[in-house]
Image (cartoon, rainbow, N blue to C red; front, side):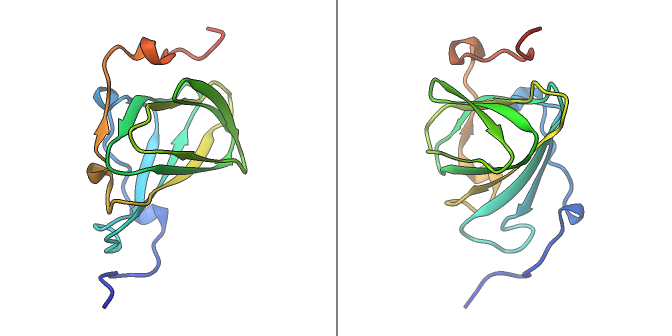
Length: 146
C-alpha cells in the first residue's frame, strides 16, 4: 500500500526553504517540492532552485544521498570534486554522496535547476555537511572576474 498522500503539486504551494549564509547559501529561492512532508514521499525528494546573478551554494556534501541535477535555464559554475563545470540548460549532473561540491551563478541571467535526492524523503535527511575553509575547495563568493 502506498504512503503517497497526493499525486500533483505546484511549486507555488511550497514556501521557499529558510536557507541562510550559515548553510552556505546566498540569494537563492530553493523549494523542496516533493518530499515526505509535501506529498508523502518516503524514498526520494525533488527540489527546484533559482540562482540570480551572484547567488551561490557554497562547498558542501551529503552523507546520506546522491544528488541528481538538471538545468532548466541560464548557466552556473558547478564545482565537483576538484573540477569546475559549466551547467547550461539541458545539462544534467550526478553528484555522488560524500563528494564536496558547490554552485555559483556568475552571469546576468537567472539559473534555474531541478534536482533529486533519490535516497531520502526530505532535505534534512541528506546529511548535508558544510566544511570550513571554503577556499581550499576553489570557492569564493565573488563572481569570477570581480
